[in-house]
Each structure stands twice: as C-alpha cells, then as structure tokens.
Length: 318
Image (cartoon, rainbow, N blue to C red; front, side, top):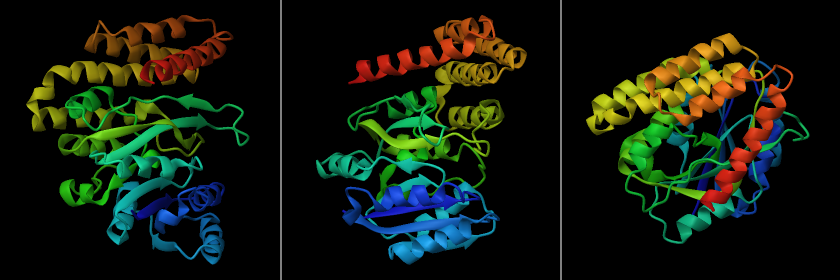
C-alpha cells in the first residue's frame, strides 16, 4: 500500500517545517511514496523553508501556484499523486508519529470504508500547554446512515486527519473549487453519499489555532454551511427533515464561539436563531447558560465543560 501525502502551504513559514517533519518521521514512513507540497502564493519565507526540506528529503515534490486557494491547491496535488491512498495535511498542522501506521492497518484488515480519520488535538500554544483532545463523531465502515448522520452533525472530519482510497476521487470527483471555505465538508458529504467512513481511536492530528486560520470565526462560515443545507436538501430530499436541526447546530456553535470571544450580545443573537430553528436542542441551552456566566468565571467553566464533554465522549464511544 503506497501513500501520496499532499500538503498545502500559504504563508506558513512558521509551521511548514514541523508539518513536513511529522510526515517524514512517521512510523509507516516506508509506505509513503511521495510528499507533494503546493506552495500557494506564499509571500513570507515559506519558499526558502520548503527548499531546505527538499534538500533533505528526495520524496518531496513542490508545485508553486499563485494563491489559487485550498480546494484548487489540493486538487492540483491530487492530480499529481500516484499512490494507492491519499493523505491530506494542512501546512499549519502536524501528525502524531503513528498516524499513518494506524490508518493503513485499518485498510489492511479488509476495511471497506473509503475514508479513514480520527480524533484531533486542538492547540494554540507552541508548547502544547493548552492542548485539548477533541473526540469527534465515530463512523463505522458497516454503517448504513453515514450521509444523514454526517449531514446533521456537520463534521468534524478535519482534512489533516484524512486518508482515503484513490478510487474515491475517481468516483465522486475532486474538491469543489467554488468553495473557498467549507470545501472539506462538501467533499465529505459527497463521499458519504456513496462510501462509508471508518474512525480510528485516538488523536491522529494536532490542529493548530492561530490568527490566520480560515475557520477562526465560525460565524463567518454560516453562509457556506446554510448553502450546503439548501443544496443537499434539493439533491437528497430525504434529508429535508434534518435541515432545521442541522441549522440549529450551526447557529448554536457559531453563537458559542462568539460568546467565547467575549462577544456576548452577538453570540446571544445567534443562539436565539438556533432556538428558532430547533427549540428542543439541549446544546443551545447549555451555550445560553455559559453566556449568562459572569465574565471572569466563564473561561474557566467553559474549559472545564469542554474537558468533561470530550472525556465523556471518548468513554462513551470506546
């Protein structure tokens, strides 16, 4: 089983070396056929950093583009890929050392899923002092409701955790280049329409939060998320009964994100819209409770709640 690893880099001089080194240092490094880096219009020192990596690692191939965006950059790399499997890594993230080994073992055991993914570690501090293990929804290769469940929950299967069969892109096509954000969710919906997913236990990827993340504000993603709701209800009418619940989750998450940033009034407005979509959503009322906490107390309670929530999820889903 050979793997093509594709990385996209746009002004990630500070992070790209760590990302590439996490690929080179994989315990299953011998299965990596090539590492394709798309340097997409970087104007910082990324080009020089990537050049130094090329000198050390002959499997690295660099494609240079002029700011075409993540979807187009990934598609370009996929078109050049020759491996049996394709693994994605964003230039500001990095992998756990045994990520590929654990995922390829799943495929090697006869798993029929088209896409294998796992949990993530969310962090922003360079020393990982604020690292939080995020347990994501767990799909199985034998699951018969992958599409409706993924449509309702809207991820989170982060691109940097994905290893997929080459046949997927031959079957459903590449990333939709009309999406500048949310392209991963749209792609996974098309995968879920014809294939299944398989979750691998444990955190596979370290997902970095910083000021330049395209997903740094969930509120900004709402128009794209609602577009996906509309388009998929038209495409698959049997999903219509889930649309309001899906939109409620989207507004609740965006509202909670605003509250966490100290924008309580903006967050409250979004949470009210979530209630209008789905008055029975327990998640919305938890977020409203957090919104009502005194300013000094709220960050500590929020982090404690996150830790308890993800710990419970991991325990429940083990």
